[in-house]
Length: 436
Image (cartoon, one colour):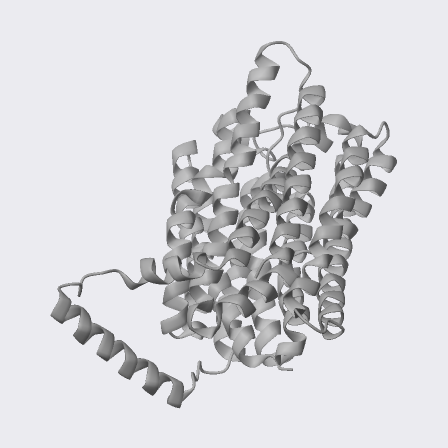
């Protein structure tokens, strides 16, 4: 298995991807604490509200990310994926550096939109590279290793609080942007040339030439192939349920990602620095452990299935989503910081096992010709899921404007939104398991 030449450089780039997009969550402070200064809190320096933050953290990033994800997947099926990986990392790193230099909220919104566009091209290229280079029996495990970048990047985002305290929010973003540029260069150096199978390319080119000739004769030459590919992917019943499950699972995860740091800062203001370190450990260790073990057990389960190996793999995300409900409820209901961090660690251990198995089932279900398109559509479900934390921000701002204490309002909103998303996703994963 090419862990060093393929998975490692892709993982480092994915860490940059997540660190760049998620650091924002830890560089704002809406509490009344004296620590909320223009030097350390972006919202104080640039003067934006909770609702504006919710839009900035979600919808602004999603604006082009959602549209680009579908086309990025199709593009990854046809282009040099090494160049695509390095180029997208360079662009989102430049956007991060642009955010550090922003003089107003509008400039940060523009940088987030550009970042979202660049990030959309990264994961379809990575997952199809892994699919083409890793043996099928190790697919879920390799996908989970790469998916660990979400949690390692999230851990570094949490530690951005420490960078914020010493360098300020602008200095922290400069450090993050520089790391991204280095990862872009490293991916060019470590990733091998994207040598797609020559024989396969030849037959594909011949097939496309024939299709074009037929379309020209029938007057359909202008039909967008990406739409046809997307329809083909969505024609598979299991994939339909898989996308629906992923959407609700993304909604829960994004609500936690966007709003947990502001919540814990508000609920436990005296433990802000400790939270940065403990949360980094939870996200980095517990998240990665859950993801890797989820992929490992999904692969093992599929090997013992005599009929449908993909159905067996989906057992892992079903169980994980169900167990995540009480774990998260206990997290936001905790009366002490120690209790909250304990249950947050448990929540990450049980909840984050879903990604690798889900991607492995998706790629296996659609086949190699439309793997990039399917992965782009999968990413699109996460992009649409960004609406959830934005909507939560609107409800949060409305509740506080009506006199409800911020900590109480956010706690209740997180309980309902996250737990509901987990339950619905478990049901959808179960329906995907039952269909083909």
